[in-house]
Image (cartoon, rainbow, N blue to C red; front, side, top):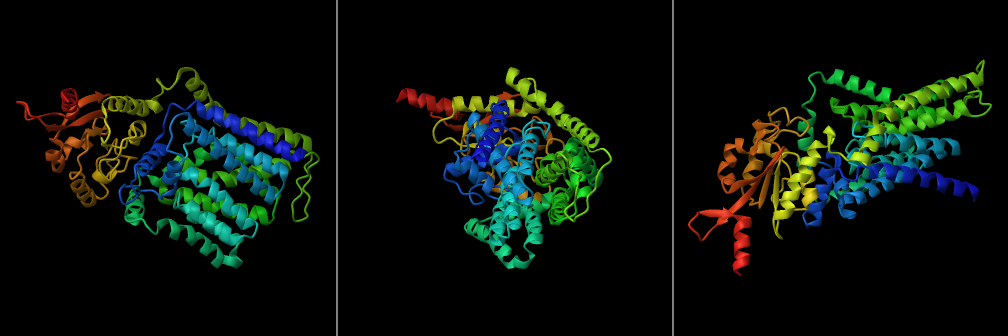
Length: 507
């Protein structure tokens, strides 16, 4: 009874701390989450992913957000905190299965810490890399407990969040190699069920994804990958110390598997040589687990660092060793804490107004505020650029299949502020021909003010279509166009909102 009460209090404290931190960001949306929220809103409008909506990610991120109503504000941050809690509970169960109770608490606490103090934005949005973490951990847990079919199912679920889950499947295969057919059957089952009815899935997720993967964003991708890996190891030096200690002291099935799992997870991070910080979320669970065991061995009273192969390694001065290790881990943990924690305080006290990282979101809020004042039932929106937060703030339907300009210009969002070279020019041109069959009420060019070479006005094949629209509002980073409608007066046409208001008043 006491154990259960203590566990409940521990996880309740983790949840409340996480929720308090995330609520500091309740007034913001991040680019890694709003794309999936926008797609979720479209499904709530009755559209189907891949058929009615261009969506270049596996389906579950959008579908999970749709299932909870695609919220923003404090409700979204409440969901974040609940999901973080679920991930921490899962890592605790895996650590308990590998070793014991103490490792479970350390792993959960360390994971909660690094899910709050890990990225420059001070928050890790729940997007495919993060969504995959829960089924990833559960898959390994089931594999460790010799449940290959369940492990395969969780790998399949993870794959429907992020295709890099194939590396999690590979890790599980080392634990269930005697039952690989069951593991494979479990993996295939959710994918067959989930993908049976989706057209265009392979074009949007795989064809576009492969074109993207073949075009590294950095000039020297190998050096960039090495630099970002070293940066991550530096910011997670506390985990590295604990993991290095357990690798040195213990040689057993658990540590051998952790080494294999870590190598596969690092391969997943480095695949494609893009290595964005969020990719390291695939490596974080195994690093946290290794740290939890290393810290337990280091700080257990009377610990001699005995290995599980019967070899006792007694340090000359255990007390001094523990003091030095504790100091090193504490100082290492202060690196991300000092770097990222002040942002939570500043946001809570002053909001995001003077924060450069939030400037695009604030501009989108301004554009959305104008649209919300002028929209009517049945209106639709076409955003040019990568500004899915505008859809979230307005909750307007997509006017076409394309919620952003990536498939229309062929230029990925990770470079379209500075580059204008398309990856797939012919495919993008065909998509633009499809776009001109749509008649959105509003068009927001959220890219042209930042990169004039990719402004919507620079495409000759869109000029006749765009002539139906007139600029009606500008923000610092966006231009809003509104459709003209035929007029009975002397002018050839008038703005849709003006005409509608006149019609309403005359009625």
